[in-house]
Length: 213
Ligand SMILES: C[S@@+](CC[C@H](N)C(=O)[O-])C[C@H]1O[C@@H](n2cnc3c(N)ncnc32)[C@H](O)[C@@H]1O
Image 1 (cartoon, rainbow, N blue to C red):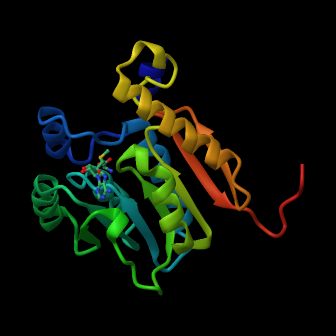
Image 2: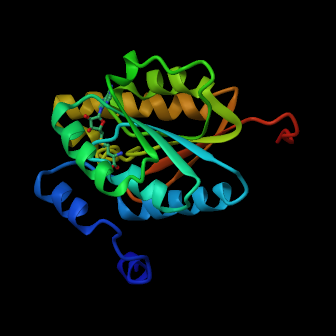
């Protein structure tokens, strides 16, 4: 059934970047999750002069290029620490980035964002064991009406049968589960977990008008 609906989804916008990721095993966001995020960006960005995204985990720039392709008023700051990824992302941005993507070449946990920085969307897609740290570090830079999206909460299917996995994978599963608990128990954010692609969460700030249920 999933394949049937996929026939109606859009064609790949950057086929050679996608092929590169497949050939060199670069982990990139899955198509279904990407299309959902693009829809959310489109809806939100249409009502704003500028729509600003912070991405934690750029790899070769595949997701950030898709994000800016949605609307000409979308701008991305994206963070990457791996030299090889930085090289490829830089060349991809020079070709397709239209000056709307700023690559921050540093470990995300060491980045000092300017105090005035503020984002409509924060996309967390880096080292999965550090998700709580990334959330705590960058959530203060989220606009009041913004959202935080995190990818890979299924961890490639490993969350459902951790006992069959290696010790390293079991540790990672534990960390991701801790993150999911952290999100679902968070006092200041409401999160929905969406079973799409490799599993994403969408978190928004609790509003003053929220109805208690
Ligand atoms: C899943 S990939 C990102 C994929 C990309 N968002 C996409 O969908 O096209 C994760 C990337 O995060 C980078 N990364 C992991 N931990 C990081 C950290 N602490 N700081 C900066 N980059 C990090 C890795 O080097 C890797 O390239």
